[in-house]
Image (cartoon, rainbow, N blue to C red; front, side):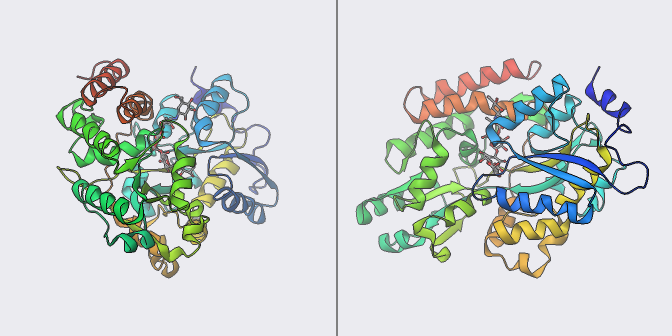
Length: 410
Ligand SMILES: C[C@H]1O[C@H](O[C@H]2[C@H](O)[C@@H](O)[C@@H](O[C@H]3[C@H](O)[C@@H](O)[C@@H](O[C@H]4[C@H](O)[C@@H](O)[C@@H](O)O[C@@H]4CO)O[C@@H]3CO)O[C@@H]2CO)[C@H](O)[C@H](O)[C@@H]1N[C@H]1C[C@@H](CO)[C@H](O)[C@@H](O)[C@@H]1O
């Protein structure tokens, strides 16, 4: 029996808010935002819900991004401990929906003004003709750079891999610092290079595995060369902390990252003067330029005992007003067209950079297995970067892993 059936049956039970129409009861929300930079903004926003609905208690729980997906699946499967609302990363959403763990939102207050959502942000909330979440933030990646180091070395933001290597060599020669920190323990950081060679993980439309085609092998060669040529440094583990530390301390001139890194980056001594941070499109490869699309949605657990308050909470947290507040405090990207038109958002320099990057970001397949493509990829990506396997062998191993995951795909 899928949970959705159970969820539907007891939605009118205790904790609901049938009688007076006034919402009541508790809404537990699992937030995955970064502790120490993003979480306090989202917690404050969530607690603001009770100002509008005094009889509702919001229980804010921060669950680390790396743990939340499985924690939610386990809780939903066992039928105990799942939150009413979860911050569901774009790739988790189709998977949770396919498992029946999410309440369809069609026809509920959660989807008020749904036409205002960016099409590419809404795409990851749709599954089998229904809508299972509301988009909260959308993101892509850019080349973050330290303007002071660039000036000292006399370099400009590189537009392609060749310019990236030239700039890195000049930075090394003139300042002794390394050009790029390339995160090596998270395959999301490989995608811009894969797209740059005209490759992709899969071709979902034609149910084909493409990671091990010529473009895929070329992308692995490109990233390996960046490290071997000393244009970039990398780590096999603890990549986020090492990348942020290296960039914030001015040990490297560049890193590839997204809007979610801004709050933490600005806390670094090199960027106490925010003007010292430059952001450019990720360098193009031999076949073109492209960065991945990421982001997070808000989804309602199918077994929630308080669906009405949960629908209202999801709508409130992704409302134009809430999104404008989050952009103001964290420079994260809204998912509503109308919010980009607000003067304060339109004047936000980092939004001004990332919105065009999002508009041309390479969309991923919103299939239940979409998120599972990263684990097999990161293993080989890290091994290629650290010389433990060749680009050819690495690509082939990932392709074989994908063919096991996506049975009838070629
Ligand atoms: C491996 C994972 O592969 C995929 O994830 C992709 C993801 O699909 C890509 O989109 C991309 O995500 C961007 C993201 O879009 C971007 O916004 C940002 O997120 C910020 C937040 O902004 C910031 O607020 C804060 O939250 O912090 C967030 C993170 O910084 O950066 C993300 C990229 O980091 O890249 C992900 C790959 O990392 C799978 O989906 C799984 O997640 C899988 N992990 C599972 C693995 C299981 C055991 O195998 C383990 O048991 C399970 O529990 C683990 O879940």
